Length: 346
Image (cartoon, rainbow, N blue to C red):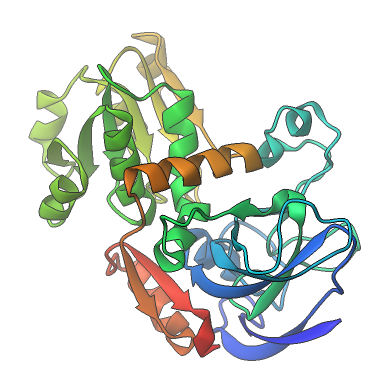
């Protein structure tokens, strides 16, 4: 076992504090990663505050991990000491179900293991990226291309793949009109990726406050959802709306913006149930869907795509002791667009 420093929430809704945790010994197929940067995802806050249900404490959040391999097990073939690597939301899965065999480990039906707030196959709780080091099976590690700096690559391990996967699945590309709902940590990545895929991109945001940013990052159009005229002007416009919003929405209003056979896909996860009039999907044969992260293979594909197109997250680098302040700023939408912890400060 290796003792490493980390930032953990000792209990639900408690401020995160510096502590130490134990990392398992490097097994035959494991890699030990010196974590250089860890992104702060809104889901870290949901889980640290038990917004999504009962959680495991103490909790070390963080599933946007970028670092350098410092040790490998004797059976490791994919990585070597010195490699630039990342770890996302998943550190293990059953490897035997149909989804795992199809490269859809994120939908493992036999027991996927989250990077934190989960229990590994060894029966021990998992701890995430707000720490100095992590030990992960090589099959759940991805390579960060040389064209991406580690700090802007870290958020790609969640925010990047969470938007890339549905944009790919619902065929965003030339000739398609795609709306990104919300202009935060996920939304700004959705804009960059949809633009790089060749779609005509519209941002739908509460206000026009981030319009300049949205257009700079690749949006063709930008509209405020607080303006009722937006829903009149854009009725029946979009092939795909990707919602990154984690607050309850008027789904019926947004579904009206879809073309026939259009899809409204949720990647933001509100803590409260949402209401829906089914006529909103019946009329126009529309789809209301959801999407999680991507599998390991698709996550690597996304990283390679981002490197090819020069796409990284827009980040604000912070010290580890600023994490509690960062959480409050995320909740008040006061970040452009992703906080990333400099793990050297842990």
